[in-house]
Image (cartoon, rainbow over all chains, first blue to last red; front, side, top):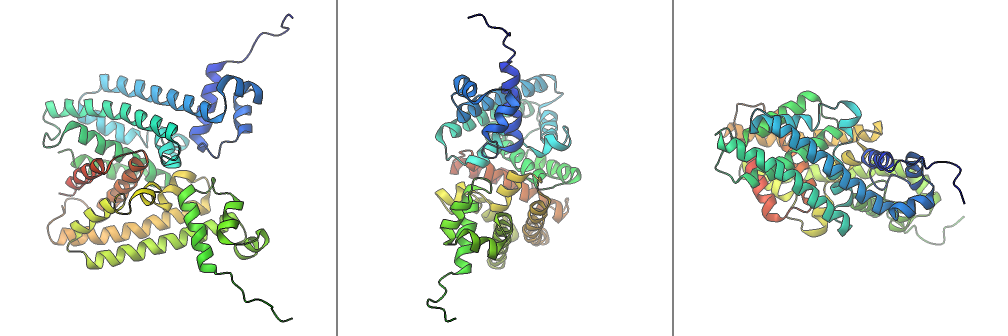
Length: 195
Length: 195
């Protein structure tokens, strides 16, 4: 049989569309029909290509984690100092992207919050995603410690863990309605802990 | 008409059961049938008494906020110092209650995270709930400032906002799998910002 039409389906764009939806709405609130529509797939093709909603979600998480990691490593390479990178990261985490982007938070943190380790497979992806981000923060902290602009009283890894938690907190308060001024205030206070 | 059986339905217990479910699972993931079963209500009685899932949820949020507020004010009254109250609160927010209780986080923060202001009515309840908790933190900060154990370089209200954000962050990292040791480390670092 000769196929009449070329295959228009773009797996990359489809996965991206799914990632955006999950990011925007969370896992539970994203229905199969939302996904099929956004990805331009039939139900059977989705199952054939991704084995189902959860598998698709895991792939979206992996894609998200990789993108964020690449972007942050790029920024760290170009930063003026470890402390400046950290300040920008905290502020950026909630402000830069404006409206919608801010409100939807971080896919990994949203997933941690939504699942709370109720699904071991998803939980382990959250942990490894967090670990990747934490490694970048640890590198920035060590840089700042080397320059004497960040305290050496605390281990770099512990400070990185604190910063992860700070970012997660900022994302929640922004979702809860905090203003940009409030966010800036929180960031400046949070940075005092690094002195 | 004489009623044959006394009314067994206990509105307080039913509302409590609904609150526990929403707290455990989130709004979206809690189905009507979960609610009916936990509350021992028929669908028509639930609509008659609560007008529907969202109204019921708003009542559960109000109940939750009031309980947390009462508990925290009680603890503040009995605390040795503002700073100690704050340390205990940060640790308690994630450790004391153990397993399940920890993992489910705070209903208000979970709701902020789940809805991200997509529903104005729910968003305004989140904001007022946050404001209630923040007022208690502000009081503890002022106490600590009066005793000289918390910096006066920053406004009490700004420090209270930072602490709210810190608690929200801790709750997310615990859901993401942080150990008790990691939580204690984050709390000690977070407190450095108050010096």
